[in-house]
Length: 341
Image (cartoon, rainbow, N blue to C red; front, side, top):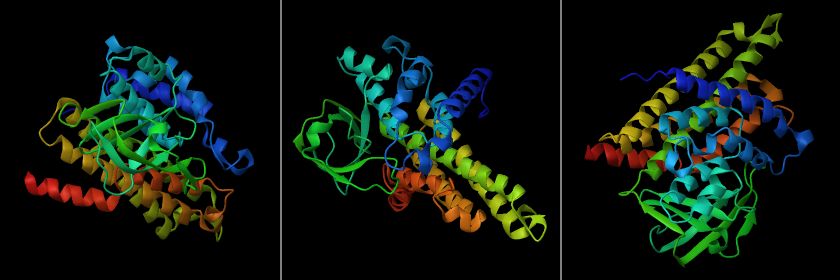
């Protein structure tokens, strides 16, 4: 199995990296630009023009007609630049809308006009033709729709379906967070896991985003270790710092290898696709959390200040871990899947 990107995929990667570096530098999230909220939604129409919002959507539905292996290349760069995770809502909502009889909604999503939030369960919920339960709503305050998914399937709801949502403070202050509840609600669009692979696609896309976080934190630590000096030498020459950076590199590489393999398995409908998608999400979010924490340690006292970008990666890593189940729940799910193999 060849897991290296082909020339077409390299072009997608280069285009995404070039656009995001120019239009969404991490500096946009620094304190002088405001630590509450973000303006990443302004990028959606431009990403749509580049074809990124419909990358994995069939051409018949206005997409590019590629697949999950191409989408993870994009999501890796989205993670590096700390793009709002609301982009995941757009990707999943487009796939849901393509299964419905609402071309206007599909066009609004693919063109970047629609705002889609994320709804992640708070405890046990029922998700299906009739849904109920408590949810956290991420980046849904100004959105008309929210996407929710569990192992049973994925659904698109109107944000008003969650009742009078309560604003709460998010760990990542650049994101909005609310508590809402569904009461015997019929989703606008529902696709069961048996009829589509959206839950697994969501896991792999989160894994790709988290891998981008892990790689960015690794690079930030290594770059700082080259210029920060102690005792007349760069701190990167000291074994303690050198080993930290090496461990960060290994974690990021393992996360990316598993994510690429999982993307191919899910795309091709492999018999163990569910297991590998879960493993990718677990390894990638673990790498993102550990690398972000180690990056702060390498930066020393400065890494704990708001003037450093290091804290941004740790906060976003916690949010991505939270989506679709945290590390503990992912480990429990993988144990169950492994026992059934």
